[in-house]
Length: 492
Image (cartoon, rainbow, N blue to C red; front, top):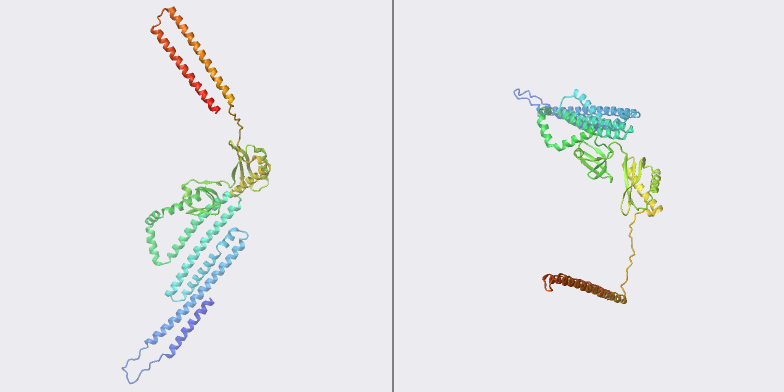
């Protein structure tokens, strides 16, 4: 306020000096008695200057009056806001809601108090002043600023209410209920803030007289406009309604562990249009809200944050399963990562070279579950390296001893050849004897039957017998030659 007066004081002094000089230096016309018909000199220029100076002085005084009254109103508003904030902080020591109001609404309350106080001070000043264009502009600007500040204050009030509700749910100790309340409260808060912002903008626009008629026409054609806007923003509206559906159905909540698109992460934020998933490497996967209403996904913490994880070890067939199970119990007893619900060690599969040991462990949340699996795996490997190295996986190759006989000596080859020749000659002699006996039997049968020597039956019988002899000789000579060649190759 003092700065404003310091700026306006030179202006007032300058206009006062101009007014005094104009009054002193302007000549006063004197009428001449000799010429009664001569027209008197006009005082038009003097009147115009005086009116200008008076108007400038009046405007300056009005501006100063409006400024200091608006300043007083703004100061009064800031003082009221400061008192309210101090009262909220004092009461907030016992009530969370008042503490949240003081935390969220402090800046907005200062701005709202100052602008509303300035607007009321300006209105009081305008009662005693003549209505001018610049005064109306200043008053309208203060009104628009006060509406904007009040809209900001209401939005921050909604933030304070949402924070109070969330903290109350988290203080209950039920993590599932706290996540559900957090998700729904955040989405409802965003919807309410959007509605309040729209109402504030409409209120600012309605302060213009020309805009009131336009708003009336716009509301009259709201049906057609809504149809056109719905078709133009179909995707955006779909995401908005999907966000509301997620909040209403409680399909996902803040801090839920989900698996989407082969990614495993934690729900960090749920808005009306998109969902933020925090991955294990601190990256953020941003998905539209419609993804969770149109595609299947896995929610690992739908009812509780407790998880059951598993790990497998490929070990040798000689692994001491009982001792391995005892070591697992010892490891779990020395760590706080295990929540004590589930622990098991079983042989889940076998193969010709190894056995598969499957270990099941439970933990309070996802991070503890992963850390517990890594701890158990490292500890068991270290124990097997120290106490049971034979249990570590290995590949086996069995080598069989095959006895290889040497080739026969030349003397043995000669004896084998002589034996083969002797057996062949013996077989031929036996065969010739059998043929002679058959011929003798044929002659005796012929003599008894009286059949002539040249008979066809006898000739056919002899031809058949000769054919059989030739076949027998051919097979015998082939086997003998094969044996001989084998013996020769062995001897060589």
